[in-house]
Image 1 (cartoon, rainbow, N blue to C red):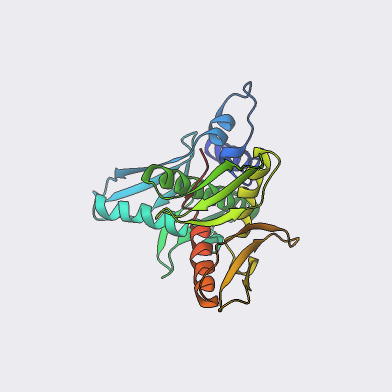
Image 2: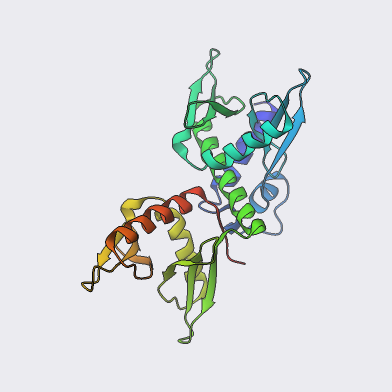
Length: 263
């Protein structure tokens, strides 16, 4: 295995070891080398001008391993729009297409809704390795979206201690509205686990249950885990249609990963 492929394998293994949230991975202080860097720090987008005079971007892991390279752009402005497209499309596994090269190796393209290629990976010796790298890159893009949300005052998760001394979390939209509130947890670690569950389950509208109150058409919703447990609840809306619209918007927000982690 060459050095570049070894680094890619290390990147994939390190990120997957931290599933589901890269920043939530407990790293032993005695750990050294690229694995610690990859799991403890976010990656970065870099732009550069190629020998052809056109502009490109890379997505780099924390150890500077290149995990995605763009197509050519005519200007820096266009390349930056490409980076935005990665942040939008790169959180959905369906947008990654794993392909087999003519020499038998595998790689993947990240594509936009119109089928346009946004970025391409390096090559891998097996389809399994390429697929694992897709998962790793998807998580890396999601982490960057969370960081961006925190930096720009976007949507965010917050934890708080209630009058009952239990810990709660809520999801606050970018406009300041609280759109999801948790049940009480006996410890902060439980609330943080609840936030992870929101990220895992909230991207699908199927996991929301809209309930009518029986009073003047009002309704609210629960977000449910696979076992039927309530993860979070909404406020009461004036109609079922408004509650359904809120579910659609919230699900899309969670799927985008543009929700900052709690401080």
